[in-house]
Structure formats: structure tokens, C-alpha cells
Image (cartoon, rainbow, N blue to C red; front, side, top):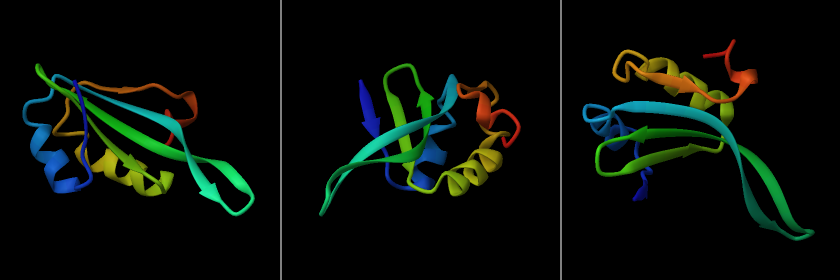
Length: 88
């Protein structure tokens, strides 16, 4: 069952129970005056025995810094996109 978390502190608390973490680049659609537009976002997902928790960063660089700070808490971190391999 997926749950989206909006607070960094709440996501860090979830990491104590996490089995693995996954990092990927995703897209969100936003409404503009010209119509719908796709925006790149960074998604960090934490798998626990009961739920899949996700936090979404609209700024990819801000998300990369967050991933660097949680590497110690989440031992099994999987980077799904090749362009993120060098940055994280």
C-alpha cells in the first residue's frame, strides 16, 4: 500500500523500519496557462514490511542532497537511473 510523505523528518523516521530505499527520476504533470506541462522530480521510496513510503522533491538537486544525508540510515539504497549514479 503506497503512502506519500511530505515532511523530511517524517520520512527519516520511516527509514528505521525500511528494508530498502529506491531513488528515481520521475515526472509530474502541472497545469499552466498553455495547458499541461511535464516537470522532472526526484522520488525517494522506502519499502517497509507494510507500506511503500514516497517523498517527492520538485528540485532534483535538493533531492540529491537529501539522499546523500540518508545513505547511512538506509543501508540498502538502490539508484534506478543511470544519470544519478555519479551524483549520489
